Length: 118
Picture 1 (cartoon, rainbow, N blue to C red):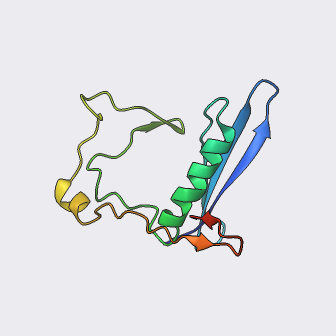
Picture 2: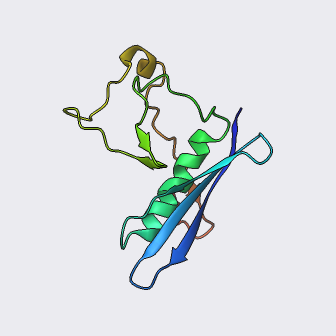
């Protein structure tokens, strides 16, 4: 099973926007919904989800090799860890297989001499 698409839906709720995240898989009809609202930061959250989607599409949504304990769910709600620090145990050997790789920024030179770095 692979993630095929991650998208956001922003719903206006008067004093705030709710941000819902849909994760679709290659299994027909199998998808999941999450909520990612951070009040007054709608564009930032939507942008962050779009940035992360590039990394997650093609991955197995059931993957749990880095975090050793599953997230506790009750009634469809995930509960924050209560252990010290991050509150979770990380398999450091597995995490080492996924080192940080800085993004290579390719500058684009416009005809007028200005430069864009995206």
